[in-house]
Amino acid sequence: MDTADGGEGFDGLRVCDCTRCPALVESRSQIVNGVGPSDASLLFVGEGPGATEDEQGEPFVGRSGDVLEEALSAAGVSREAIRITNCVRCRPPENRDPKAEELQNCRGYLETEIETVGPDLLVTLGKVPSQHLLDRSVAITKEAGSIVETRLGGAPRRVLLSMHPAATLYDRSQREPFFETIAEAAAIAGMADDDSHNGQSRLGEF
Ligand code: URA
Image (cartoon, rainbow, N blue to C red):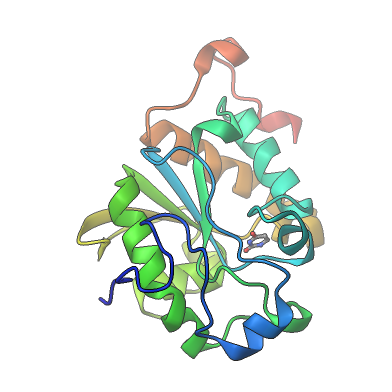
């Protein structure tokens, strides 16, 4: 795996300047770095910034972020306790999927971020990050909720595959399985706050 060598203003977590992907340099307003504790037990990995993220400079602050935050809250986890990042840090034009070359250009930053944070569990949000991190094709509707071990950031890591939160906006029946996957992530990372729900699952509410 390649790692970022810091040649472009990278401190192990934040990229200050990067011009590796000409199309993304053209389409971005700013670089969107990961947010959250640098020693978080849970690291969520999305695809890449959308319009709202590009505007605000933070991952998952648009409608998908609202769904993720709701699911975290239902699992008893605050957004501030987890780290969220993306496979690519610049918004692709017209919200297209990042190209293989763009994913590769950003890979070293992600690998180093994973190594720096050293999470107990990574959670891939959607097909693109799942395929990118596992380096194989993933049928996310079938594989969401499963845990895979793979080498990332210089060590073996557990990766929980999840559908993208936006899937719940297009298809409401995906809401409950998505919330269940996030609750599973919280439980594995030992972060689920049972007291906030009096020990009752709140999944039935959704
Ligand atoms: N979708 C993603 O994959 N990442 C974001 O930051 C926002 C939406």
